Length: 205
Image (cartoon, rainbow, N blue to C red; front, side, top):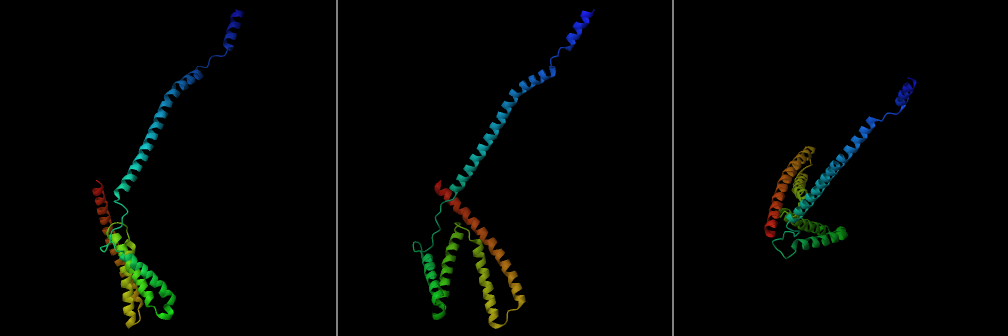
């Protein structure tokens, strides 16, 4: 009897195998090889989506570059004579001469030079804007507002003192006129640019 009890005690004291740890290790060994292909597939999908997005961007850029018919500026009716450029050059020279000798010989060369530069510059901007080559909406909308405001102030100041109410009223008229001209000129440029791109595609096609 004593030997049997000793054998039972010795058997009970022996460490039992850890079933849970073995099961967990088995599960971990079973699940890891199943998770890695999924991760690889997800990474491959993400890489494919990124490459597709880059390809789409490059295609859009190429299409945008190809849609523009070229960098050639719209020609003037008097082409090939560069009349506007000559006018700007002569006006710049006259402006410099007027600034140097304006006090002694009068201010006529100065105003003539400024006027010549303004006329040549406005002609180039109008041609580019109407042809859809480059937008000059803000400058072209501001010029009539400045001319109207200056003309009204000069006419009123020639006969009487300018009242404060006139300045407030002119400011409201200036803002309204600028908004109307800006919308009109912007819409005109968008239409001209669309026609320019369409013509460029037809010539290339």
